[in-house]
Amino acid sequence: DDMHVMDVRFFPDGKTLLVRAAERATIDHEMMYSGLFTVSVDGGRLARLVETEGKIGDMAVSPDGRYVAFTGAHDIHDSTSGIVYVVGADGRGKRALSADAPLTFTRIAFRDARRLVGLAVDSTRTRFYEFEVKKGTMRALSLASPVCGDFDLEAQTVACAGSTPEHPAEVFAARLGERALRRLSVSNEHLLDKKLGAQQVFRWKAADGLELEGILILPVGYEKGTRYPLAVLPHGGPEGVSLDGWRTRATYPAQILATAGYAVFEPNYRGSSGRGWRFATADHWDLGGKEFTDVLDGIDALAAEGIVDPDRVGMAGWSYGGYFSALAATMHSERFKAAMIGAAVTDWVSFTGTTEIEHENSLVHWNLWPWDDLDLAWSRSPIRHVDKAKTPALVVHGLADTRVPPGQGLEIYRALRHKKVPTQLVLYPREPHGLVENVHSLDFIERLVGWFDRYVKGTAAAE
Image 1 (cartoon, rainbow, N blue to C red):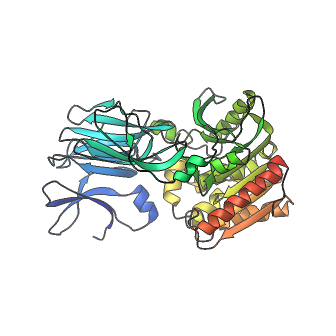
Image 2 (image 1 turned 180 degrees about the horizontal axis):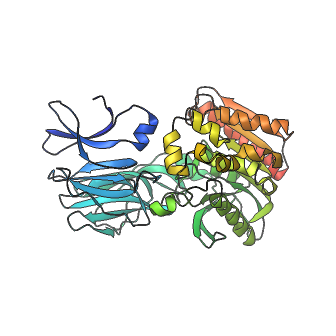
């Protein structure tokens, strides 16, 4: 049978390969329906190693060839692949080693034949853990680290690509047993001369008592007692997560907004990664519901501490964060002075009929196909609430976006224009579900800051 191969690992004997593959070459099948197989290096058919359900992430083979470890989902409705599993090389004895841990594991590597090291997102940071494969035990390693996005392990030395609030990713390494990773590479030294906003983890409680965390960046030149305009930058996913490392990139220019005088808030609302599969699925059947009021509660908490002016708030998000921005501009327009709606879902019904991830979205985000409850799907679509819209909205989309097709941006733009809400549509040629061309990134950042300056601060004209 034809198979679509995504990833491979050698068994230590060099004669067999561990393969992650799916039966169809679609994004949905890659994300939702891939499996683990083995195949001889001499060729032949793929043989399924073990039955899995839902998303699969990283995978590794033990040095003695006896075990296969992988990160995967709790079930088909889990939006993450954050649980560490181990199975015998013969496909028997599959066990979850971290099923109930309030963590999301992203990478794994065997330390030796009996121990496995895993990198996990732990709320707003990353941590290394060690598993005793045979015993099934797990412990945190006393290894202070930056926010690591990837790591490798060789000869008892761990290396990672890690960032800090003050600097983007560099190479860090340490011997296992040491207390901290050391930075090895030096680049982007010009950042040492730049003034950055102070960054911290901000904690608050939702209306129902759920404890939440996010990242707060204070404006450059912050003075205690002064209330500042607020830029809310909700992450995508919704199973994304905002970590306490370097926060600035093309579609989320956090420190640039801090330099422009804004407090910047990146909330990890329910449905985010980093707190286990139960938290990641806590938004099921309720997209745009409590997960959004989590953010409103965070804004209220910032205002209660005297940090921000609740009457000068803007929201700028991309992808699912753009969906939040579209809700801010419509359903919750009374709370927001400006919105940037980037590559956003604005109509759940038409989106599901045109996206490349209709299974992934319906099974792990909604846990519901919109056609099975059209009233609910429509009630959580920003386009449904355009009659409430008063918030000036900058609508941005890439013309090559197949994840969230540009028609979603056109829908909300035309509706807002019809309602005579100040709005602007920017369509970037060749761009997929994000921005990859530098000229477009720079143009976008200038437009975003200009839009917020005009409508949140009320101090500058947006061209």
